[in-house]
Amino acid sequence: MSDKTILIVGTYDTKNDELEYMAERVVAMGGGVLTMDISVLGDPEKPTDISKHDVARAAGSSIQAAIEGGDENTAMQIMADGASRLAKNLHDEGRFDGVVILGGTMGTDVALDVCQALPLGVPKYVVSTVSFSPIIPSSRLSADIQMILWAGGLFGLNSVCKASLSQAAGAVLGAARAVEAPTGAKPVVGMTSLGSSCLRYMKSLKPALEARGFEVAIFHATGMGGMAYESIARDGGFACVMDFALPELGNLMAGSVINSGEDRMLNAGVAGIPQIIAPGCLDLIDFAGWQEIPEQYKDRPFHEHNRLIKSSALNADERRETAREMAKRIRASTTPAHVILTTQGIEEWDRPGEPAHDPEALAEFCDEMRKVMTPPIHFTELDCHINDQAFTDKALEIFDAWVADGTIKTAV
Image (cartoon, rainbow, N blue to C red; front, side, top):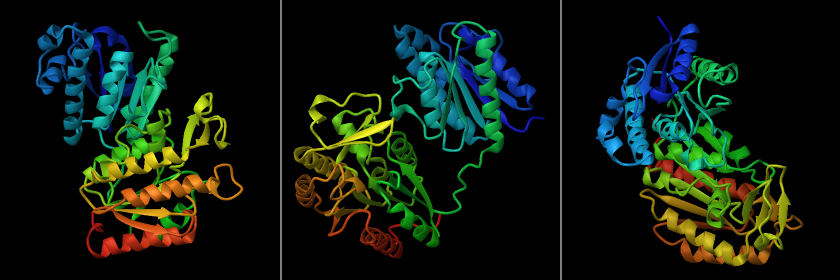
């Protein structure tokens, strides 16, 4: 008898030995396996638990249709759809506890969809020739995905690739045994922020919300954090959100790689989650530390946070544009949204004497916010800085009123 079962997914026609090796390692460590074949053209050496025909049928198609589609991209999208649907259904039925998926670019493309179909807390391990590659956008990554580079294993087993495959097998089984998945025992408030050197409200808001019986999950709004936040919001995982750090929206609009996808600020409203929103850090555009600052930003105020990330300030016209885009996204909400604007500043580096201090551009932004944040958006303007206690107090006042009138649900 095994304690945990691992779903193993891959193209068994071309990677049978590697997939079988991982299965053997899982079984040797006391785990169980469930195998899924996402091949199209060939067949595995021995039948898998879920055949390629099962996968294609789950997508409302067939292997023959995938072959006759005429190109490998179309075929693998059929398999990605079917594999994602089957994985979700199988997990809902309690058939497996974690998943490991092997592939090159084709298999990785499928793997990303499968992992996004599974809820937070299900161990997801991808062994890929393109792990950590810039060709993988943050929007394709599930909130708790794990990846390892499939080094030296493109064709056939060897001692180099066994190191990666055995680690993956052990990691996913160990994670399935060790994971404490979200229990849902308390309603969760999702909050976005940056480090406390820039935004400090979380230090006082978290204990205050916990004292009210809520759990607080704070997401680092540097691309991947916002992606995880949006993923959980999309699934209705929050009772309320305090979306107070929006640099990822400005980065998206400016074309920076430090963004969290096209759906930033959209999922909570569509999922029916009440939103309290503030434009924290929406005056900056972030760049990867290895990037050259584009010419158009070189004359701007500049802050080099560390070797991974650096920022330039947006000008007045760009800030007006971010205000308009923010309002547009909030208006897609189906539930109440309350925006708080702090007119004395929206992040620590815009205070007098700091690199991003630009009172004229801030005034332009505030003026545009007043124009666009109109009903049904609730709008409060405060004569303070976002890091002042007055901001925290107002956020809690709105939160408490929504709890009192039932807008925010206190029971899970």
